[in-house]
Length: 95
Image (cartoon, rainbow, N blue to C red; front, side):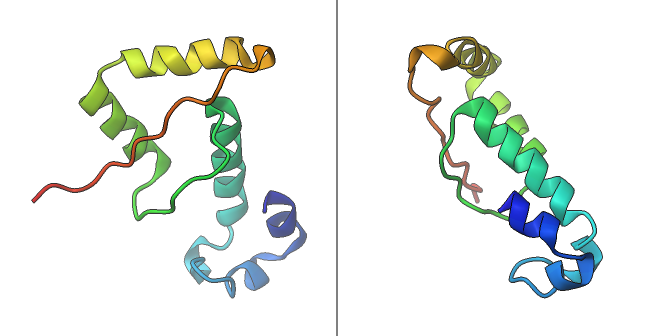
């Protein structure tokens, strides 16, 4: 997806589903950040939601405390030993 976005000018990215014209110039940078986050956490897929990555990290920290981030660091260190990915939890708004 990153390569595809990089090949398109912002005007064409603005015509893609889910990318508004004001965000089209930033969409490539966002894709690079998301791709890097997925690689670092060992995630093969993600679920798109209206929240940003930083809100997801903050919610995970509030719900699980700081120990979950240490698990991601351990995962990065063990990446070459075939350890599985860090489990992904989807946050939901509570009413």
